[in-house]
Image (cartoon, rainbow, N blue to C red; front, side, top):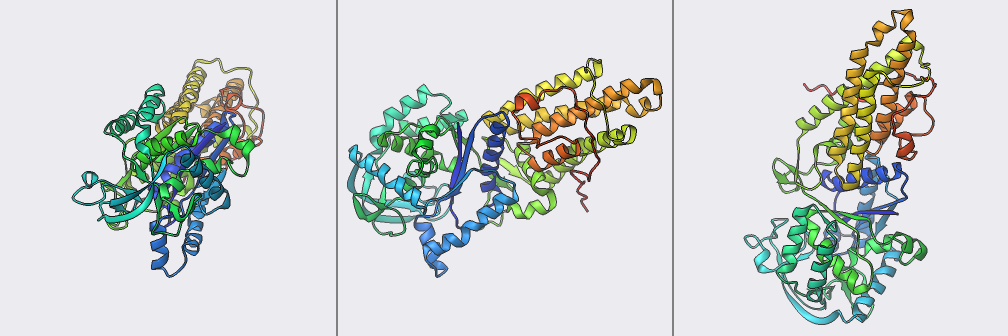
Length: 507
């Protein structure tokens, strides 16, 4: 079972392209695993408790529940706009989540890892995080660059300091636990500095899940939010599925929440007696003009700003091809247009139009199956398709760019194949009818294989092409082992259709 999660997002605004990036990678990876025949459970959702939500609701003159109810629909709209295929959408205000949080916190309490104490120090409401004075930058939150608040409360504390050595042992014994290595090293350095116990409750806030042993306090939002992964796995409402599904195959997170997921969360799981996730995969920020997206500097861009021009598939392709998972990435409108026109309109779109037009013009769309593809020209296609299939395994390591590089080499080889074999010349010579069938069959087979390979990234375009090829089902339906190998295109009727990716004309 491939259990894959995104972070759960704060429902304080419409999701921007940075938020959408994490979900998009998770969706493409989930589609890849389904394509190769694995059982997949992918989950995303929203984090609805905490001081930030409570204050936003107060500012709008509504209750916190009314506020999150009014915002959460924007996430469903955006994920539908981008053709996301998650299996579960969890809200932390759901009963199944409360029924998971309280028993897990009770386990931590019973393990002797919780005690009463006093907290006083810097707190960033924007990221709901405690900081030390040394971690601040010019007195401000190092992530949001905003002024922090000084909080002072009598709370319950988690003995985080108890788990430093065990965490280091786990990281050392499991090299894939945190990826990429730069983030793994960051986590090791953070733990080696010494972990300090952390407040796990709030006494001044009522918007949250009450502690099971002290209902006068609610769980600190991270101690509530991180447990969503256990809730979504069925801990309280489907224990049979939980046994099958836990632990997580991979948590996908941004670098700003790395320490919560790679240091606090594993310690919580150790305390509660649950297995740790297989992997925490960390990506960088999506920058606009060299800066992290923010309303305050007018760099926040929404998917709905881009999809009308590029389409959902064009959007998905750009961010999965041009942004490498791990380091920070940069976005520009001009770069997105250039990538769309060069790759989708020209390389891929023109190839599809050309091959289908030739097949319809010379064979009425009925190209017979052939015995083999043994000619030298076809051999290049077969080899390149095999390389593209191997490159697609990059999805298993979140290397979406490398996987797509392999697919585009196949399209490049197919374009070169059509030029080299010149079916328009073959069609003029009746004695070359058999060779024309071989060429057309190989060209169509390259489109079939290409449709399968792009289906995790561009599911709509893949299925449209699949339908034009006259094939049953969908491009992403079957196990890759049987649908991805280059073979003989079946004797079906292909049809021409509208261009998959019309060129974007820039004034």
